[in-house]
Amino acid sequence: MARVREVDAVIVGAGFSGLYMLHKLRGQGLSAVVFEKGDGVGGTWYWNRYPGARCDVESPYYSYSFDPELEQEWEWTERYPAQPELMRYLNFVADRYDLRRDLQLETTVTAAEYDGGTNRWRVSTSSARGDEVTQARFCIMATGCLSTSRIPDFRGLESFRGEVYHTGAWPHEDVDFTGKRVGVVGTGSSGIQSIPVIAAQAEQLTVFQRTPNFSVPAKNGPLDQEFWRQVKADYRRIREDAKHTPTGLPFPPGADAALEAAPEERQRVFDEHWTLGGFRLAQCFSDLAVSNEANETVAEYIRTKIDEIVDDPETARLLKPYDHPVGTKRICVDTEYYATYNRPNVQLVDVRSAPIEEITPTGLRTAEQEYEFDAIVFATGFDAMTGALLAIDIRGRDGVALREKWEAGPRAYLGVSMAGFPNLFTVTGPGSPSVLSNMVTSIEQHVDWIAAHIEYLDANGLQSSEPLAEAEDAWVEHVNALADMTLFPQANSWYLGANVPGKPRVFMPYVGGVGAYRAKCDEVAAKSYEGFALA
Ligand code: NA7
Image (cartoon, rainbow, N blue to C red; front, side, top):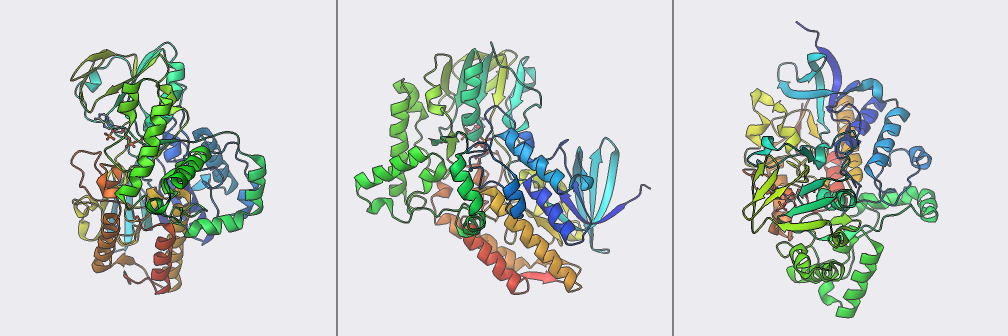
């Protein structure tokens, strides 16, 4: 029988979460290995290398805060980091902290099984080196929230003779659309970021839109050096502020209610945020996320902008969202998205009224018409938040599968640990602020909390930690109750699993905000990990 490797912790995934988790546990004297499917670090940013891929959080805030020296050493070049710059950053981090010696790349975790007898996780991996088993006291899933890309089950997909791409699994080689007829399916963030870039290259671009999204200009550009100098001088305070706001960004949402503001004042605030760029427009008043009437004021503001930008009235009409409140699907942050529809080589097709029926050998056919393409780009999103976890055969106490436990939707205590799955942790799992926040702030909070929890167990001679079922139930109930107080459940979003046919409709992230969530996690820790059974 093959040798079984022993480590203190297995970490799955080498993105922002996995890299920091490894660094942190090493600092506590633990041995750890990171398994990563890709052939490099970067996680979400490793896979999402489509044209125009860029973070919608500004560079100075979308970075690690754990080491003030790192903050001072690294130089961002643009207001929002593009995918290649994020890859450079994460590779720099991997080298700077000598992380690579514990990274096992091109290795897929296929199963993780808890053995109650030995209190160990047996983690099975598959790679070109063959199948292996690693035994660990702790298993930490740093698998990302948007890491399982999906192309809808279109009939005839395999028959297409042209090139097929998914934005979330983009090739590493340059893709050149020059002189080509290209179809893009999907108008979420990935579609909205890639469409202007593809349009500038392709001979002809046809965009298939099922649901229009609200999008605001990024106003990207070179990072203002004076601003960057000030950030560097004040980084400690900025990071501290970011830890306690709802979004994990160092500025609070607007304190005034849109409905109490005079129309001219509202217009002024909206104009100011539109000019500033980025998604803060959706948070500039306190009632936008909780009142339909308030939300409609910002929705109408964006619709007016679409009318102003887009020349063709019918195209503008199709681009204006009416089916969901602003922010209940992640607001998109774009560069010249709406203006792209004024180009003569770009056409918008509404597939709500005439759905895509099949992919043909030469293109695709909707209920109304047939289209011919050299390439089709699917910007159709992810099996978000649970997809990557459920792709692994995770089995806890008594062989119970996570797939069974989560049959009716994900359940976890604090979004970090599950009853029946001792010593297993999820970084930014369902039930935590995760995708509703600045991910790096939330990742660091989780990694720090998990590391401190492990330290506590070791310091007290404890072998195992697992949430109590009643604590988990209460948390899940609280997460749902909070979501129900907002407008979020009104949208058919991936937050609710609505984009994957058959996925249980449960609101997955915690809407209570990063600050409140952190306080709760800290309180649990201060009360000797209240809600956990420790043994
Ligand atoms: P999203 O936001 O899930 O967007 C996927 C898009 O694909 C969306 O417009 C979908 O329309 C569309 N889609 C999905 N299935 C179909 C079918 N069958 N027919 C037509 N159109 C379809 O994924 P992204 O990658 O853009 O962004 C994910 C996150 O990454 C984003 O929120 C940011 O946080 C960063 P629908 O709206 O479902 O009608």
